[in-house]
Image (cartoon, rainbow over all chains, first blue to last red; front, side, top):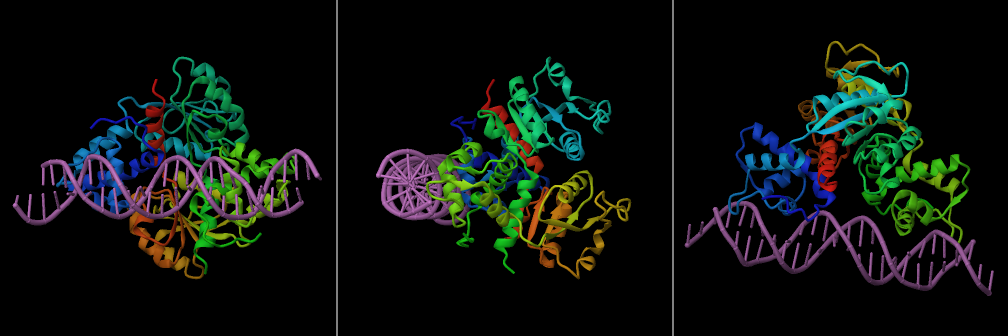
Length: 215
Length: 215
DNA sequence: TAGATTGTTAATCGATTAACAATC
DNA sequence: TAGATTGTTAATCGATTAACAATC
């Protein structure tokens, strides 16, 4: 029942939020139990994979019966969200940064935005919609001296991210959600990076649309 | 030299934009050639993989010499961008939609934003920063009758995306860049979807920060 | 020619899928 | 008990890595 701790593979971890969405939806609709094959059809995968995935965490089901939605929802949410929210800082409050900050505070569970930073004098001193003030990026280390953030969200250009990276890593931040065109994960091994490169993603889509759907 | 067309695997395609970034940067810095091992170090992978990847497209290098930066830049850009930009529509002009539209028109190559849609009466009639007017989502099919978009970017809630999906697929749109919490790829096989689920990505990061960096 | 480095085939590794015994 | 469905081991599949001949 508890995490077997034998290091769960990244593909499995990345599927957890998707399981969670489908489970929450079924729960909302009053569904009580689900089989691995039903869940597999929703997920677009196989029943085998569903069972393998859940058994990475000890198994959530009952032989002969299936999976109870409530158990699934409870167990997966325990995996995805801990009791303590992750202290998070936002770096870069441009258009994308602001969209992300709204998302972070309004929709995302498990994160707490403790500060936001920008280098532009026009931005500094303003306040985000969520009430968090925008601080001078120069004061980053001073303002985080009392409490080291768990996670930094980077919405700044490539070169700025590159400059800042050693400072952020040096501060002891362990996780990055990276919208910069800069690959933190390559330069700093050992830290956890979730890259969401909008440009890269668009290029990939373009390639596939052109090459996989020949007109 | 030309694409061997034997269906390139998705992992390879997804690495192309990253290769492209590093190659462009080297080109900017006046670097003339690079070896597979140098490129591998930057990418965080092996020289073998670099050579395997490039050979999916016929091979861009010279034995004994390495890869000419100019050749790489030229070949990879040919793979990633075609002569004709992809006609693109944006659906949902909220905070995230607007950030994406700015990105799409200002920074992303290979795409042309032909129209934007929203259902909110306050939004309809306004104009995005890039000059594209916001149309009523009810007029979607009428406005796209003349030219079917290649790609749709969805920045709307889950339920709206679900309602709209059959219409969009029915219109003949082949590619989706999906910021909704709705998994188009599962319900409509055969279409190309690039999912960029901000929430999922955050959940994954949280799991990894908590479990891979035990304090 | 000798050294370097690619292109390409072979080996390994890991993730997915299949099979089946356990059990509700 | 019989049917259903999980947990788990085995087989397959695909992607990554290693090895080496080709060649600049």
